[in-house]
Image (cartoon, rainbow, N blue to C red; front, side, top):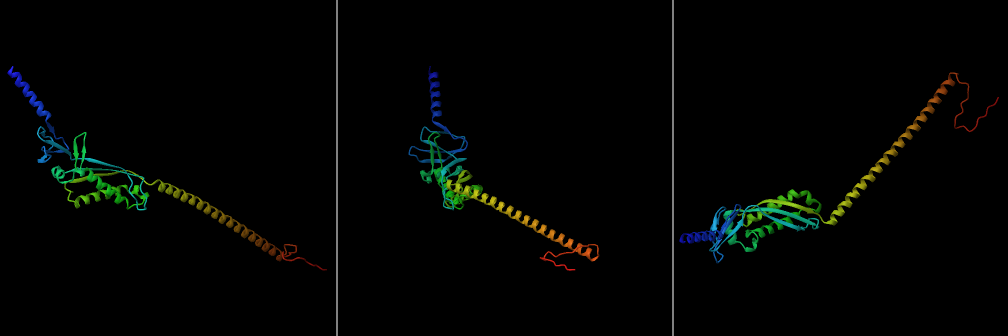
Amino acid sequence: MKRSIKLALAIASVAILASGCTRITTGEVGVRVNASKEVQGAELLPGSWNQTLVGDVLTFPTKDISINLENKTPMTSDNSALADFDITVVYGINPASVSELYTAKSKSFHAYDDKERDTFLMYNYVSTLVNNASYKVVREYKSLEVADNRATIELKIREAVTDQLKAEKLDTALTLTVVQIRNILPNAEILASATAYVKAQNDLKIKQTEVDIAKKESERMAALSSNSTASIAYMNAQAALNISEGVKNGKVQTIIIPSTMTGLMIGK
């Protein structure tokens, strides 16, 4: 009987301990806090089991933290706001900086996932940096140039955010690994104007082609007419020469009357 009670107590103890522990999974770091919410000790590494009967253990993802900024409308250099601008960035946290970032930085810089009970360090802070960089970089381009310069804009946004992290001495704690613009849509009026402009240019080319064809046709007809007149004059001159030669040699018994004469008097 005593053995059964001991076994039951042992099982209950194991169950209590198991329910009062949390395991740090791959890709995250833990931090122990006491009842007063004060951080205690160093970061808890992936794979470790940590009791939560006394105090608590907070978990912080450190790899491939994704941020999606949706429906942004940055202004372009031609003072036209984009109809839509969507961007995704991915960043990582240096595991050795987790405790310092959580305790030293404003809680408003972080985001908390109620479902997973994870704290995403500097999530809101990085979101703000990316948003500001996006608006600044897009401002360098005209509305219809933004889409064509997508890769360059991504690079400039990444550089702007990295420079800001360096300026605030956070470049060793945070690393921006991916910047991807998912959608760029110019203002509807700009698109309509661009479409109308392209149509007008195409119409102008068509009209110019028609003018060029008409001009060439006119030149062709003039050339044919000139050649025809020259040919007739040549043939008339050749005929007159032949007749003149015939008369001279006594081979032609006829009287040649110049075309300019209006009358001729012959007397015997």
